[in-house]
Length: 265
Image (tube, rainbow, N blue to C red; front, side, top):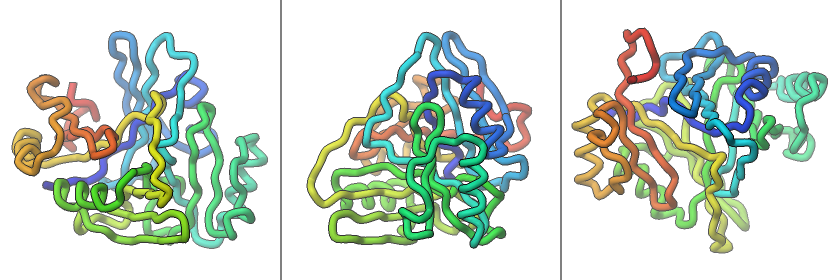
């Protein structure tokens, strides 16, 4: 199983406002668009993307004016060069971006802003060789059992735990595909020790894992007792969905790099 993280999907209430926000503040460009029956999907990313870099998928459903973010969904993190966090943060503030947590409140190591729908976006510092400016670094989700969450990703998707940070009240675990490129996105699993439970909300969509062979890799997941949420057959053999132990949706997608469209439709 290749297992590269292909994209992360979030829902937005006003597509044009969201596109303007990401294009003007994070310098993203529209990579592809699909107009469906009552919904629109847009893939975004930096102009210069590595082949293993992850896309941001914005989904807008007609008639959706308000979305609940929920607390099971954490944030996406984007990259800026080492030593330039403060400068890029101040640039966003000058552009009128909503402040959430400034660098000083985060020990000078990272910062947070919010997009028009309240999706949290962390700004992290990385070596310039580890991905384009503003490229997706990781996606954070909250889990109720760290052992189960780590077991899910390491056993079912053959991911490796590549980092962890533990405090008195919570822990962060980072997982990514084996031999992933430095430019690839990882998943951050956040576990709070107090035993709380979480609400997903309808603003949080899914993670997508790019696979070599949809049918073969789906069968492998079924053999490993992954939940059968939406099998390939129910999606015209174009994609499939499973869920993790907390109900986070995970899409499986076989993408042809030479195809005219990023969508399998």
